[in-house]
Image 1 (spheres, rainbow, N blue to C red):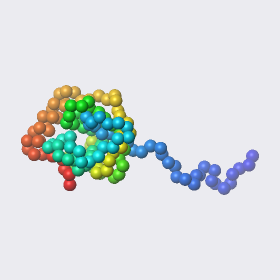
Image 2: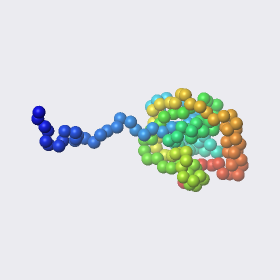
Image 3: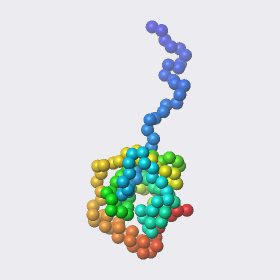
Length: 151
């Protein structure tokens, strides 16, 4: 039996490519379709609803569920799978400026997110938990502490 002695039998000239990009979650009440882009400049879902300078995503489903449950609007709560089209950074609203670390693995960007799918089966928080969170946010709003950090 002949043996390959050049040492290249398992090596490729091209680096291994993965067909998948890192996918994140985005919770909202917006009705989007696969291929749509989520962009800055629309009314924020939180605070005084001014035009958003950033868009937000999370690597955890729980944070996206909160995003959907707390979003303004009357539409159905939705969780989309999104891919960032540019750099992302820690969301200062949910990191060291307000909470230690980044427990919700939440990030923001000025670059669009591409919708690549939708999670259709997920369990929301209990009505009591949502009410407690909304009451807490209302209290923060009264104190002027609910506006997004956009610096």
